Image 1 (cartoon, rainbow, N blue to C red):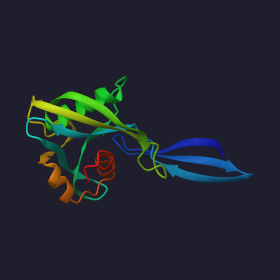
Image 2: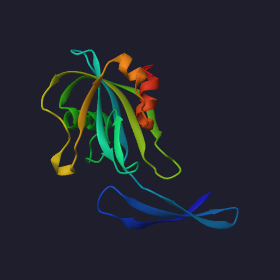
Image 3: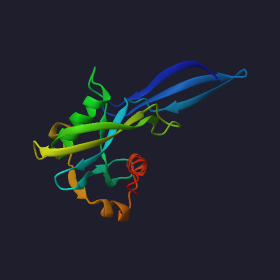
Image 4: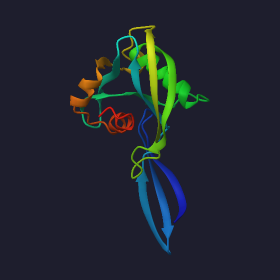
Length: 173
């Protein structure tokens, strides 16, 4: 498979872009469209003071509804490594400083049929809330913080893939 061209078709100035690949294989030329993306981070967050896991509920445009998920965000700050991105996202979304953070999975593609985005997955322990969280007004985030016990996690129906994968890795589902 040879890539002949990688053209930008659309740049919405926000999170959505669309590119078109012109490919050649065995003398045949064809196209495939994809969504170019920065990489992302996510973390299962455990509050050692309350003995609960912290999740966020927020509106997601794809399913057009609110989704309960682990804390996550984009690696969109220049020069910021994934651990620092995760620390920033946890502070922004739920207001906590991280006591400890551990990578639990190697980065994986979120949906390789349509994007180049990879996600770094962590387990974080927190104890001190520095602010109320809820996301950034500048990003129009409206995030609800949800704390669940280990038993509540087992009976909650999660529909977000990164959340399911991270919880399964930690044997919480």
